[in-house]
Amino acid sequence: MAIHELFPYLRVKDAGRAIDFYVRAFGATEKFRLTEPGGRIGHAELDFGGATLMLSDEYPELGCLGPQSIGGTSMSIHLHVDDCDRMIRHAAAEGAVVVREPSDAFYGERSGTVRDPFGHEWMIGHSIEQVTPEEMQRRYDALMKGEVR
Image: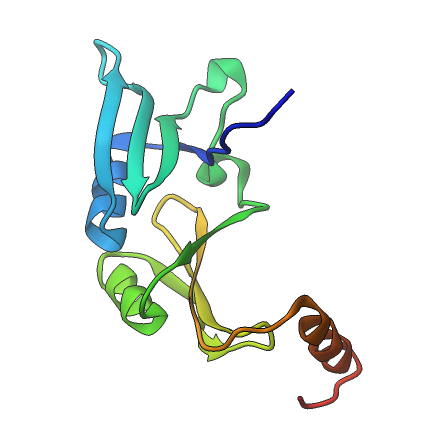
């Protein structure tokens, strides 16, 4: 059986506000949303430069809870952009919290991390050099030994 696509699917408190934030902070485009008569968003899709992110409001009655309800998150979403410094500053200006300032990394990327107002973490980065998997492993080994590359 073939896999055709993979979609991150976020659960958030107040999906409508989350959609507005992702549009403002990251430049996403709303594709569509399905809204219950009471206003709860059962499903929405956002376009992030050709990649689809799905999200919904929380459904506690089904065990679907977001980071704010469970007290954190165990995953992050990686946005690969043209200028991570600028994107991180913009996301912070829109209400994200900078978790890790941008810095150059051994794997050939400059990146940092923000936490959105709904508890999800976003690694935001851009390429600074092409690094082979072998070189990346060598640098990782040196990093783990406390050596400077």
